[in-house]
Structures are given as C-alpha cells and as structure tokens.
Image (tube, rainbow, N blue to C red; front, side, top):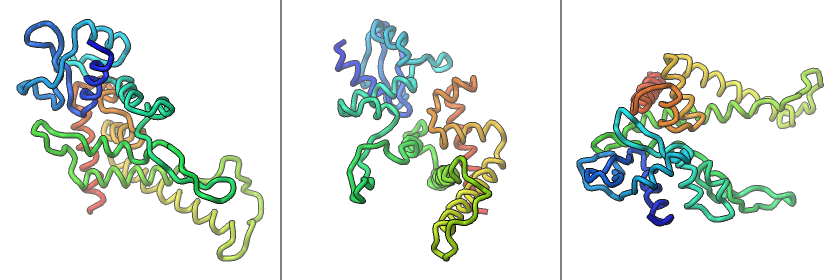
Length: 249
C-alpha cells in the first residue's frame, strides 16, 4: 500500500474502539472503526505493512481479542501526520490550539500551544458496544473536577520560598495577600483531590490517576497493569461513578 493509504488507515484506527483483525480471506488485515467485526470493514492493510508497523511499535496485539490496536506511539504518529509541518513534534503530545498570551510589552500575542482538556475529549469519545457514550455526564463531570483540583494544586508556592522573610505587603490588596490567597486555594484543591482519591480502592485510584490526571491511554494502562483488554475501561467507569456519587452525597 502507499504511504498515504497507510496513514489514512492509522487515522481510522485512532478511533476509541477501532481494531485490526485478520481478513477472512487470509490475505491481510481488515479495519473495524467500532470494533464490531460483524460489519463491513472500513479499510485494509497488507500483512507486510502490519508486520512493519508492529516492528515500529505503532501497533500492538491484544491476544484475548485476536486483534491489533494502535499504541500510544501510534496515536502520536497520527497526530504528527495530521498536524502542520512546523507543529509535528508539539502535536504528538495532544491537540494544538491558538492561545493568547501577554507579551513583554503587555500586549496580547497569539501562539500555538497544546489544547487544554484534550484528555476529556478522549473520555467523552468512549463508546460501548452499541455506540452509546460509555461515561455518563456526572462521571465526566467528576473527572473534570478532579483534574481541575489537580491543576490548582500544582500552583502552590514557588520552590525555594523564604518562610522566614517578613510579609511584602500589608494592605488588603497587597502582594502578600494575593500570594496567601493563591497558596490557600492550592492547599484546598490538594485536600479535595486527596480526599476524593483516598476514598477509592487502590486499583481504581491508579486507573483514575493515570487516565484523568496523567492522561494515559487505556491500552497502555492495561498493558502496564497486566490486565485484559477493556478491563481498564470498566475500572475507569467504576472509579468515576464512585467519585460522582460521593460528590452528589
């Protein structure tokens, strides 16, 4: 197959449930975007191309499903291929969007940067065997709240802060007051995050942390944990359902 045809097939394989399975004719592999092999294949790859992609780490086998899936390295390749030439190495880490930043002169400057919340787009795109959303709105909201608290918790005091130094301002709107408010908000967010995660069983906590906070793919998670295919998806739903129930109580 041509290089363009291969990249087109890999882009289709980036869908959440997509798999490659052996062609019934025994001459290659068929691509099923929704994982449903009863439907007509959306594309095909030759056995030679698949062998090369496996060697490159773009594809990985799921023995219990008798199929092949795209790896995290393969997803990065798809993002690189679909991006602008000057953004290839940035795009491999996630979606790229326009951002407005303040330049040295105090004006606004448009730059290209990684999109915020790209991980939630992948969570929202998860589907069950009937094509329905895998996660409910309350479960997605629980994941978003946890992620927001995690991000706020990172905005603590600067490393190397001098705790012995006197306050730099005494007015109600002085610099020290603003820093104390920011540090207090970070501490509150950290407590909420630890309380939420602490209520989960260890396996569920690992799944939620790695998928929602580290934005790790479910396939990579399952391989790292030594779990069968789709078990990470089920564990993620259980963990988020528990977080959603706790926040509603």
